[in-house]
Length: 152
Image (tube, rainbow, N blue to C red):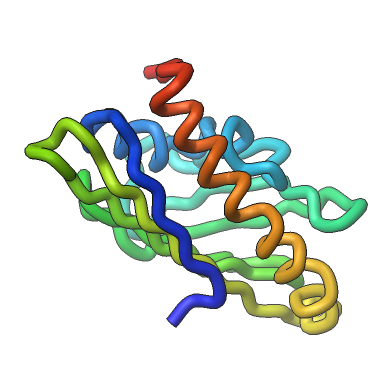
């Protein structure tokens, strides 16, 4: 069971939603703590491919490397942090609704601290995530549905 769980329903086709949410370059558009993100491999995402994310944690920016542990298009994906004092564990699911006219996105997130991260996770990271996740869900929905601005 994850520490944080969220679900949103979006008035977009599942394939549109999938293409957007698994593209790391979009993270700063819908995740408040993401400053930047880039895929480190040239190949399309797959289990083992890595993403570098610069996140704002409290008043600091921290680089984090995430690795895809699952990549099952267009249904689900998982990533885990592999370096740094704070390591995230994320699982996402994209489900078609209404014969594919709408989509449900499920997000599960947890963290593990290493070194100083053992203090940061309960004192800074989890409280920040608790506040941020509902806003991230709303931003994702707005980005996909209201504005309809999807980059290829």
